[in-house]
Image (tube, rainbow, N blue to C red):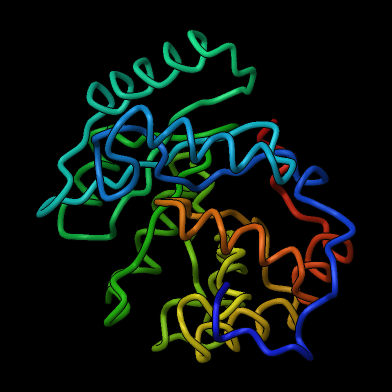
Length: 246
């Protein structure tokens, strides 16, 4: 299926699924709102594929980005309503909620100050950095989120090549949780990202795992990840926090 998998790294057949974590808390399955699902039909297919591998609850997290996806609580909840209606029409029974993946851009602190963050569970806030460089005010913002009662989660830390595990360890000491993309372990984003993901697991720095589901290629990789030894390690050797979002 994917030519970057080495036979030596694969289990012959997965003997487990994602049912132990129950909740996928980072996905782009809401229709027509960002670079994920474009239609309700797309959304339904992705939801079905997630259910097939044991996911029992989905928290959709559309992008909020000043320059590209200017989503708000209103646009996100409207799209969520469309998807829920289609799930009900097709008699597909799965819990689904919405929060957001906030981009750490020049408007992020303003949204924090204005109380316009989309949260999940017990006031968790998912956000992402630039893939090019770390924001100079990252520590300040993490501390501000904590002071205001939020529980910050950094999305896919393995995709930030300018960061290392010592920096991530310091972030966690300041109260930040880290969310790994499961498909990173397949080599989907390349060998370097795969290695960084494995290093995070080896150093026990992962708090949440999720699909970051956008399209069917991600769905295929999510299933393929179940054959990866490092996914088995993080699923069964870790006290992952996904289940807190049930």
